View 1 (cartoon, helix red, strand yellow):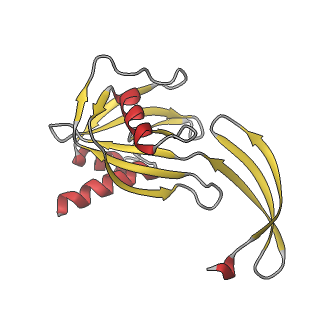
View 2 (tube, rainbow, N blue to C red):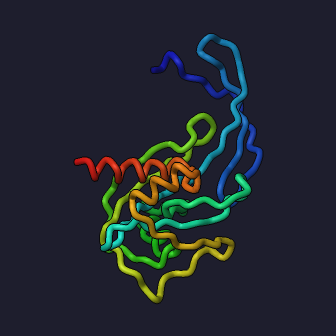
View 3 (cartoon, rainbow, N blue to C red):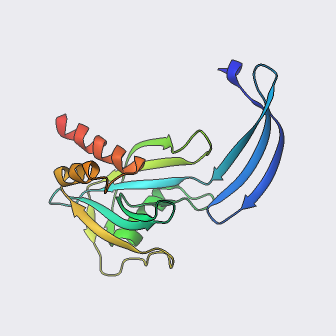
Length: 181
């Protein structure tokens, strides 16, 4: 696929934030012309599909400022520098839901928005969760509510656009595919 490769001529770093870094690259296109690419650099993230003993999906409801509304999502969070995604997944599960897991099954990884960002999300499934009283506290600027739904209820949430993000929709489709096997 080298014939479609864009060569970077120049990079201008715009912003270095807590979650993302922004840059604008000047690139040479395969036909020799030039263009600009606005890029978001991100450390990566994890998502966890936690299933309770009574077969409910543990989700969280939280407000998403870019959308100006709350969504119901699988627990997820950003990787810390150099952190193993499994460690991040276990931490985020506990912080956001009050559940701990003794094992995780890797499902897949995927690019969240490859047209402008390099973020990779690692997705895990766990069916071995236990509610704990001494759960790690959520981030100080994060307010979440735990929501537990059956797969059928989650699919209804998708239809109602209460679940409306890619990682959670993927999780629901994945669980539905497991049911069919």
